[in-house]
Image 1 (cartoon, rainbow, N blue to C red):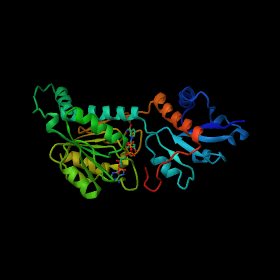
Image 2: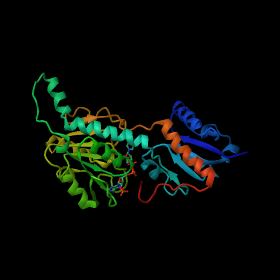
Image 3: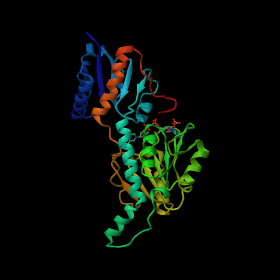
Image 4: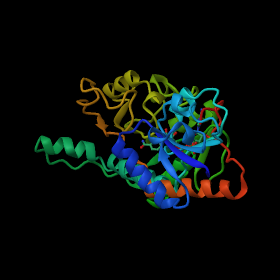
Length: 314
Ligand code: NAP
């Protein structure tokens, strides 16, 4: 019997079935089945696993596994839960997801630069007051993270006329973008960013990266958008910075715990816009096509694709 692909997730059965439909449509010549439905003999035939929040114990049930493709762009949970895993884990890099994220970055940057939170508040008070207009070319946006998502966001912001800078771990050159790296680079970029957008992965180095001293570097009336991961920010420090007027408004799509607790003060804070992790959802048909291309290349050349770097954490 030929090899099988196992779908290994902790998703609901309905969500798994949606993925099985999209993946089977993208790879009609492959047999793709949920690990929940595989017999002991069939488990032996699996050489590729496609995963979404997999239970590590499930992956141990696949003795002939060669490599793994995740359906998500973020990998911090895999890095944490699969320490010491010996097979390559490929993460999702989907231009469609990058486009969706870039659109969200532009939308919420405009929300801040065009003072929508303040106008919303004024409307609730029946207050007719025109605030000073700040144009895009007069607004400096600093991107934390210049990977697949950060670079797409930079291009979209540039097209809209914003002055864009970006920070990464290693040195980068991007046309029209002032780039920074390393600790000194972070401080320099924060000092010159009217709006900061976080598109970093959560790693040992980025956990708690943004706290009181980082917010204190921002220019007056700065805005903050977090589309990366909640634990990159020290939430208490952010709330203190908002209360003190050091940060004018924060748009948060990601949180230390999700869903955000009903008791969290963030829900009611006038300086916070809470989003339920919606900035860039994975699109099953385009994601399935990306996975299919990798599987097809592997079937053709037998070379396992390169996986994420566990030491680096992303
Ligand atoms: P990526 O291509 O791996 O890029 C990560 C970027 O972060 C790179 O530029 C990297 O620097 C930089 N970076 C990592 N550690 C750093 C550090 N210690 N100091 C400075 N820069 C650092 O990842 P991506 O595809 O752009 O995705 C980024 C994150 O977005 C994901 O990990 C996920 O957490 C989040 N995400 C959120 C949503 C949502 O809906 N909210 C959706 C998808 C993804 P180098 O370039 O030097 O390597």
